[in-house]
Length: 144
Length: 101
Image (cartoon, rainbow over all chains, first blue to last red; front, side):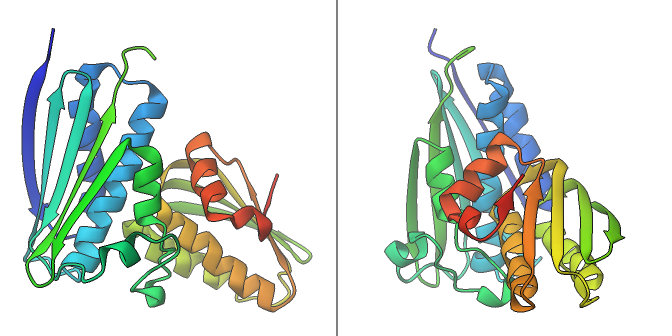
């Protein structure tokens, strides 16, 4: 059976919503019967994308909204995290391990590297001044 | 996030409990820096066995404390590292700086 399912949430660009975003993805993914490790991977990758949207995209402006969409197509879970914030001028540079535009926040610069390691595919689209969309997918094999 | 700390001589042991993400990182940073403000601390052990979630923000916190302790010639040790946290630590190369026990 080719299961298809979809949900979306929007939340204020506040760092306390990182826990909420992780819980949404974990709850939605539960129907695919993921392993503990797969759930942990999803939670970690989503946390990185949401953190980027909040602290980079929106510069922690709580009046702005982060939008997250979760989609299931068969055994593939796809999560899209979108902000209408400042955007990324050089995506290749932003994705480079250890690169951070905010060293003063003690950011490790490993956010995109973690997303890439914990998901099967990570796609980043960004327009400076318009916003950034991160689309990540992972195959969830039943009882694997 | 809670931190339980014990100091014995120049060694400080800090057990972290809870979620370590960008939201809690600032608070954890301040709590740990208050503890290692005592310059007699030369060895900091971070026990992560009670950490239920950690992403790269946590890596930033550990690296930041390493830089402070290393400046005074001390060392940082991590224990109780979960498989997920270990993966983040390994990809960052942090084990060349911080010892895992």
